[in-house]
Length: 245
Image (cartoon, rainbow, N blue to C red):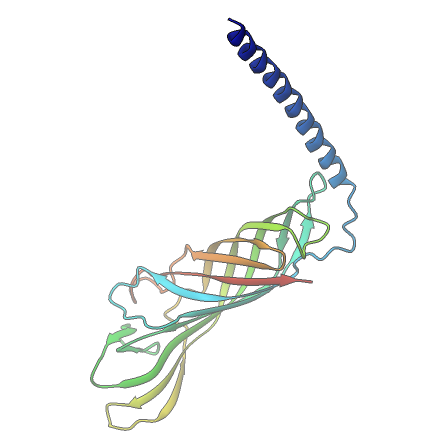
């Protein structure tokens, strides 16, 4: 009976202690929010400059034979606007340029095709040492950001979710031909034409990291190639992001 009474008293004591701790934590959180509102953000770095590089690929590429390490490289300059009620949250928007490099194997990429057939499988007529499609876009990302240290963006954990809207600047195929249909090789060729690609693109984005380094991911919702001239391709990319200023 004494043991049971002791257990009951312990449970009651722990419950009271837990309630006191919870009230203490609530007060602590409340004080922290008040302190956050009083932070001096006038001299803080705001991740204005973002440089991203990593891997790119196509969802739903179908029979197109992609090869190697497909690359993406993006540069943006964003203006950051902290929330007055909670400076850990902010909205950032600004211009930039995004570029994707997609490499092909045993494939002729004819972006000047008169028949509308852009991708042609070929393993015997032409031999390429390098064959890639490069597309670049003028883009405007919009991010909802969260930082654990809003007064010093060079440290602390960060998270960002957003979108980006872009318009096509250029599309070109760059190739190093080892041997063509005329048995001639050892030369470079560059073909530029964007008529078969959609002029606009819309993508969803995400970033997470610490300090000036984070990981990013992007998925293009709109179709990459105009309808009827190829598979319904949706580019995606992921990699490393360096930010600062």
